[in-house]
Amino acid sequence: MGARLRVHKHGSLSEQFGVLLPLDQLFDVRASAALRLWRSLAGRRPGPDPSMLTPERRNRLILALRALDGRLERATYPQIAAAIFNTAPISKRDWISHELRDQTGRLVRLGFKMMRGGYRQLLLYPYRRSV
Image 1: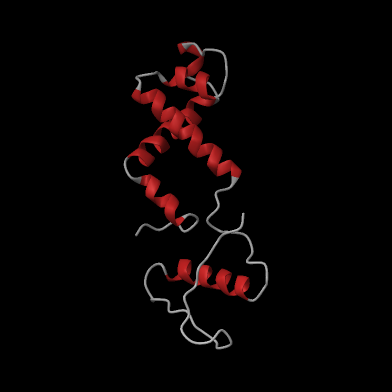
Image 2 (image 1 turned 45 degrees about the vertical axis):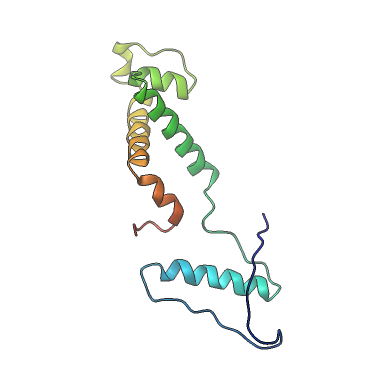
């Protein structure tokens, strides 16, 4: 996808200009963005956007939010697994050793983490530290 970027520059268009980057905890994010900007202005390909979620990550987040919705509606973990993985209902006896048991638990925990403010980390993806 292309992006529209407006740059305000004092002086003539033939002069060089610079980018001011504060040396804070987001310096690496800003430097990466500045490098992509420079590549675009120089007529080069800016390269892949590092903030784009991979399809696998996006699908995992979707499943986590669906699992959270189920849990908030008081669905049991086997019911959630059957719904989000499109499987037949899983009996209590089979659930103890079922392959989807741990995966469903992780998705529910991720959903709750996102609900409690973890969604903000998506703003800095793929940079993992909190601000």
